[in-house]
Each structure stands twice: as structure tokens, then as C-alpha cells.
Length: 304
Image (tube, rainbow, N blue to C red; front, side, top):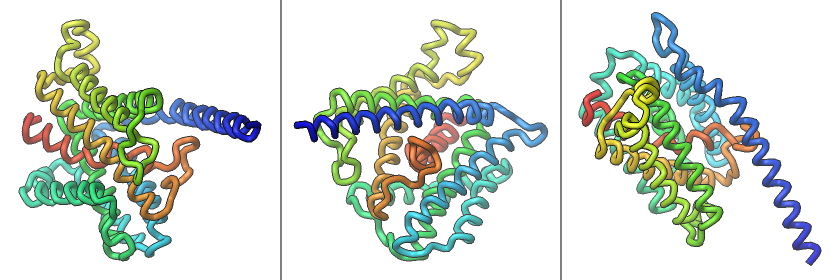
């Protein structure tokens, strides 16, 4: 009895310590991230955001390669070089034709489907082959991160980046709260034992609701001055719901896919660079798979 009570007290203290670490990390990093998104550097426009995305990509790719290193040593230098080149290519507005070509759109869709199929089968293919590990890192991080540069370069780019951030953060918070209080049915215990169906449903609905509030135009009826200043983009009811649903589904799929990668390489976290959070990849995982889908929806369907 005493052993059980002591264990419970110890776990409670560990949870409080981790919560404090996570809160301090967020308080320190949030103002920096917000400033980078908002800041333009004439005549180079969103250059600070480019530097930020490249930095996050380099750290994420380094984490991925180090996790995979226990199975097979990837091509570190060439992998980083190609990933950075892809992100730089996205920054050059004159290369938009490349990203809008049927070949690149088709490849992006094929990569996404391949990742989702691996997730559904709970198995990473060729996880211990040097070339395939390197290519996976280039695509998963370099190719998909490049779409955040493309989103930032769209009209209303700043608002769109904040929109994706707020929607994912809302998803994560609600999924955690619902899962920890009401969760009874495990979502995928082999990959992520803590996640529940109830939490996933709550997070999905939160993403749809926040998307509707931010970009449907409904908030304009309440406070037009505030809405037009911070979220001037209004896409209407059905587009806002569709985008919210895509983010709600792919955001959680991205989280699970990174968990699958960690389990494949027997890693608890991608690294310990962020106290209380793990690694950069642990924080960015929800954003990765949704990036190309959100970009092409905005650029090709909404014609932004």
C-alpha cells in the first residue's frame, strides 16, 4: 500500500515538474516565434522566417538522422544540403511554377499517401537502409517543411501561418484535456499508448471550430475592427470547415507518424533540446504532413 502511494506521489511530482518545464519553455519561445513570423526585412520580405524554418529543419533532420543512426548511418551532409536547397527553392517566388507542376503535386501526394500507409500498417519500410533513411529525411523534413515557406509567401501569409499554428495548438490542447479526463478507448496503443479515441475526436472538433472562427468570416459580425486587423482572410463557411477538418486529421496523423518513427528506432523523444517537450521534431510533428495539403488547397482551390 505504501509502495503504491509513494509511487503515485512520485509520478505526481514528475508530472508537475514536466508541466513547469513545458510552461517555461513556451513562455520563452512563443514571443520569439511570433516576432519572427510578423517581422519582414525589406527588401527581402520574409527572410527572418526563412532563416527560422531552415534552422528548425536542420535541427529536425539532425534529430531524425541521429535516431536512425542506431540502425544505419545516413548520408548526413548530402541529406542536409538537399533539404536546405528545397527550402531555399520555395523562398524564390519565381520558382512557383515548379511547386505547381503536376509532377511535384503528384510526388507530394504520393509521399503523403506512402507515409499514411506506413502509419496504417504500423511499419516503417526500409528503416535500416542508408539511402532510404536519407531520402526519407529529405522528403519528410526538407520537402514538407518547404511548404511553410510557400504558405508564408501567399497573400495573407502571416495570418495563414498564425491560423495553422492556432488551429494545431487548439487541437493539441483539447485532445490532451479530453483524452486525460474522458478518454477510455485507446486510439493506437502500439504506436502511442497515451492517445485515446475520445481525445482524437475532441481535438478534431476543436480544429474545425477554431478554423471556422478564424477564417470563415463569422467573427467579423462580432468585432470587425479586430478581425480585419488580425485575420482579414475570410474564405466562407465550407472552406473554413474543410480546412479545419484537413488540419484536424493530418495534424493528428503527423503526430502518430512521428511516434511510429520513434518506436521504430527505439527512441523515447527525438532529442532533449526543449525542456519538458523533447526535441524539435516532437513539437513540429503535427505540422509536417498537413503542410502540402493546406498549401495546395489555399493556392489551387481558393486561388490565393
